[in-house]
Image 1 (spheres, rainbow, N blue to C red):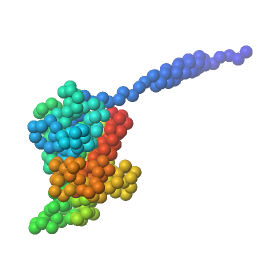
Image 2: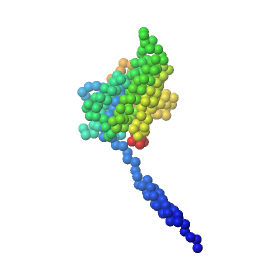
Image 3: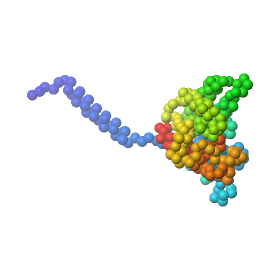
Image 4: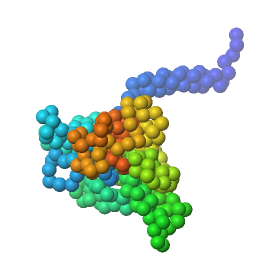
Length: 317
């Protein structure tokens, strides 16, 4: 009869406990669940793309095409929502500027302001810190930079102004600053929905200007942002606003759009005064990408908002 080696009992124990460990691990994996992030608040930073008109009214206009209530006369801020409203609605939140339901659900806070540039983001953040802080239970949106691109473009050719190369470098520098501000928000524990800046050269604004330079300025700002921001899917859901307008420009029908090159609002209906009653010809707020020469109509906001909501829900927050 074969004699058992003095090493074999230990080998048997290893196999027994090893098998048990594998079974236990598989059982644990099978029973584990990934928890979906449920924010306590939505905090919005940015420019006209995310802002309500300043004022005391709780039914404020947006810098897009504004709609009416069912009577066709009364302005309704909930009609034709902008992208941050679509994201907020995904969690049942409303804004004080545009309430939904009861006061209990007005858990979306807007710090975005018309005319804001990257340099103004620090003030928006500080105002939020002073008023209610930023923490781990917050979902924060950031979309800003279009006014920076317009500002830099306007400098070209002015006496004593930087040349083209210097302007592009400045755009990248502002993108780096934007990335630093985003990292500050992340450092406070919040999850961030960050949209890149749509290419301004593809907007109607670029039709009568140097579209190539406008796009280059936008791209440089976005590149500065991307190389600086914390690239961690557990903390940031990145939405590509620049890619959105590229797709819309080449195949608008793929996004449910009819027009991606013209402004829906008449030239005299400047934002935020534009409504569905002041559209140009056959324009439609839901199937036009642009409201005016710079800012998105509901058709663009719908796509940006739905992409943001999808990205957040798919992110391992």
